[in-house]
Image 1 (cartoon, rainbow over the protein chains, first blue to last red):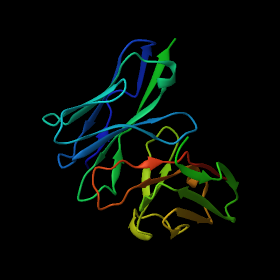
Image 2 (cartoon, chains in turn blue, purple):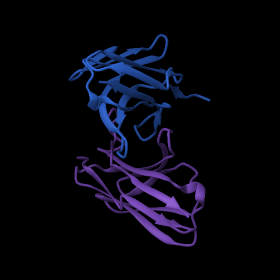
Image 3 (cartoon, rainbow over the protein chains, first blue to last red):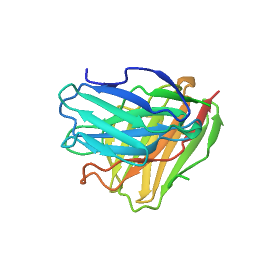
Image 4 (cartoon, rainbow over the protein chains, first blue to last red):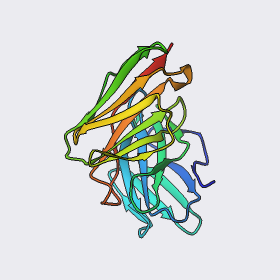
Length: 113
Length: 115
């Protein structure tokens, strides 16, 4: 079946360095993608989104890249801080509406002081 | 702080109990969702409400009964749950299903434990 998955389940990054979290998706019909951050004991928090007609979008310290050719999504976090430690999920919408959001398996990012 | 509020934060119940989870949002969103999240797993969709009507039921067992009394509130009624139902239950909302490309906003969930 089609799924959204991540290449690496865990990632450790030195504080101040940049981090890159990758995500592969298999549904070529997906047209909208979101990155969520989930801290311990909290719900998923929206970070950034991107539509399929774009290949790059930037936010505050974060950049999402979309490569539709290879069905790959990445989240870049610049100058990581201890507060960036969390599980990061990519998620995709496909179909007519945005009611069905499919999450990837998640990557745990740990920032080393 | 999240704009989607869920109560209670924690709930412990026996398999014969009846309890309800509550979710509230005041963002004017007309689509609301229930998700179930097991430890170290991604959230899984359970139900979708659109304009207070049930739009999607992802083949959820009948021991889970959703209710949307008005556009701001979403309940999940629980009865005769099993130990494997222990999980984090997340509520989310989005503007409405007719508008695509709108992110869902999540509450912090109710941590449910079934004894």
